[in-house]
Image 1 (spheres, each protein chain N blue to C red):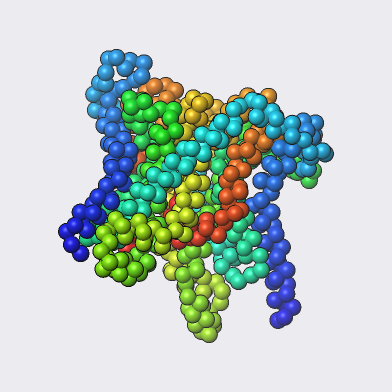
Image 2: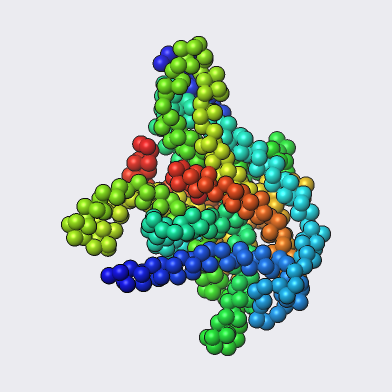
Length: 277
Length: 292
């Protein structure tokens, strides 16, 4: 019996290592390739590790596209999107859990339903609307539509969290004469700090990675996001993989740091929030 | 609660409602409306011309639309099924109290966190003519000539599916894990005393108890798989010869490359109808979710 258990543990460790390898290997290969000199990349069979590490690919990635500019655009757009999404979302969840408004369930179901819409049903009217309003190729325009797409998730997440926050804190504040807005700002927001932080990170990653809308709405270089910019490296086949890998590394660096530093918040956010694409 | 607080409640809901009305509801209604018109960018000066259901008739006779639709649906069915099976296995593993649990959960976040475009780029390179997959197969004498993975319709589809499963299984497994964590250990202990084996425990306790979580997770994965766009843009750009083009890609091209707004709207509405149709199967699970 004991031996059987031991065999089980070994089998488990092997499986686990294999699994970890499959999850991480593609990433590791990309990191490795981004430091390979051109000659390594042309080898058959392909090398897994650079013969000598070089920054040549990064230099070319920076020279071929204004990728730093794209990263900057992504940052601005993503941060505006997070702010709008979390502000509107926390206000809505407050209204849904702490006031007597009608149609609460209807609203929640409706919000869930809109997150099931295909993006292609929105894209052309938004393009036309933005074109009329001068919002094409702007940070704010793209940020607003991206924030709305992440709003359902935010509202659901924060509503679920708020339902579990005891109301007693608010009642004592109410006795002290605070109005609802003050209660929201001074009592609930501090209590929700951790949850708001978690959902902000989820929205940040989601917004950073949005592709279709960014590609269609911000077509010009000055406001192009980095995920769209990255695909431009591929358009000509003469560009070696090392350069694309380096560009991809630049694209995901902020995300990678975020995942590593805030993994606990992210896991908590995903698992408490339930649903996100 | 008093009237003032109710008014405050509506006020606080207002920003969300406005955003949704202007940027989700209006565009959707507008797209449905436009699907009944002949509108082309090239002849914009003539204005839209009402054509009734003619765009829809055209779609039903459009072979390319059917090709993209079948591929989109097949992609969705196969990828979601694989992700559910593998994701469930992973979730069961992660649910055990084991050393290295933290490491596994972090590793899982990497495919989830990186942009779809990047995972497309990596997998395209793996399956390139002189890539790792071909040279590994050649090393084991499984192939004589390097396979043109992305140049052959079926191999390209397989490659796209692999990349998608790699990217999305982790997320699926985390959501399933969140369902598993809510199941009390007591059930399993009771079942063990009654002599139920691991498999019976899974089918009789685990599955029924996470059914709601599972259905909602699957629904959201189905809907997002049906929108597939960036993965394929990054991997094959629809090729070879448009054989891996999805409905989303076809609609976007119809809108912005061919400038055929009316027909693009029709394709989008057909997709919308299919999404709604699929969601209908999940209404019960959504209701459970709605009563959180």
